[in-house]
Amino acid sequence: MGVVATAPSASAWWRTLGDPQLDALVEAALTHNPDVHAAQARLREARAQLLGQRAKELPKASADAAAVRMRSPDLSKLSSGGNGNSGGGRGPLQLYTAGLDASWEIDLFGGTRRSIEAASAQADALDADLADTQVSLAAEVAQAYVDLRDEQQRFILAQQSADLQQRMLVLTQARRAHGTAAEVDVERLSGQVQTTRAALVPLDEQIAESLDRLAVLTGRAPGALDADLSAAQPLPVLPATVDVGDPGALLRQRPDIRAAERRLASSNAQIGEHVADYFPKVSLFGDLGFTAADPGHLFRKTNFSWLGVPYLQWNVLDFGRTAADVRSAKASRDEASARYEHAVLAALQDANSALSSYGHQREHVVRLEQVDASAQRALTLMRQRYAAGVATAIDLLDTERTQFSAQQDVIAGRAQLLKDFVLLQKSLGLGWQAPVQGQPQAS
Image 1: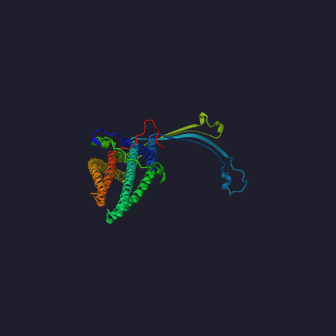
Image 2: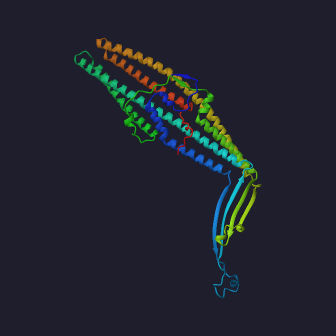
Image 3: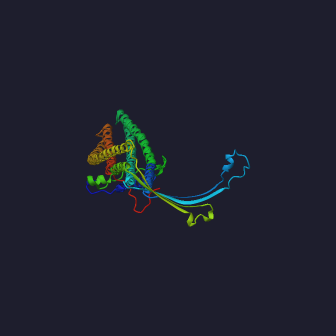
């Protein structure tokens, strides 16, 4: 369980614990958890918006066609007061047209390019957000799984202790009947049995809560995992070494830092997008079409027309609107810069604290195991003394209580060490799944 400076892998750290059920739970959560689905949807939305921004660099074109039939009134009869034959108007007018219109705004001052850059950075930020969701989810599933196995192990230990105490109570009651044990010994052993059995109730409740929590994390209804995980299993085994890398690797791996950096880049690009509004916009308009009174003659050469228009638009007097937009964008950039700095500092602190906690907890577990071994030896000796009649039931009860407490502490200490290991992986930004090259994005 040593710590080395080798750069860790970005994904699937849970496989180093050698627990197939944990592997299956984490993979199921990364596939079916609603938070992951929501993050994937936000990423798809951002990528669609990026495609829309890129399309603004290209010309717009539209085709149209129309058939017009119109009858106009006889203006000479209208001027004479409307007397005479009302059916003497002009014959119907027919007109047929077909054409193609196109327009293109030339990005002379980079406004469109900067908007594309901002949208691209925002999509990258949401991609990092998805990775951060995966990191947090993998850690949460692993911690819930460790809690479940810890509670199951302590439940079994409490049951075993209660059964042993019950046997001791029966033996002491028999000795009391023969006058070789005191009534107080019987009462104390009876109280200890009840206390130990009472501890089983909250442990059973915690096991049920952990099972439901794991089911929800994996995108299933509470109770869906009871059949698969109700059987008690030992705690996962920590790897012999833990790779942590260096601070530079940490800054490259943590998705929250990458997300903050990409949002800073997006904010900076938005400044350039607004600065471009100070300058003129140049557009090209064109129209190709055919017009005729007879549809059979529509596409004759003599009926062809075209139009080309360069168009300059410059908002010379906007009363400070553009300047206000630029100042607002710069303020947003400054906020994004501060958030990026905070993300870096928080990541370094998080990793340092997690590494320290893991190291200290590892030493603590070693001490707890030594205490448990000593308590086990003391209980063996006390049982021998009690069987020989040179120790009282109270002495044996106190020794057993000490050994039971030492076993509970070892189980809890190992579970906490595992959770500290999980937190260390999370603080290093590990657990996100890079998409396979050539694999389509989740829809």
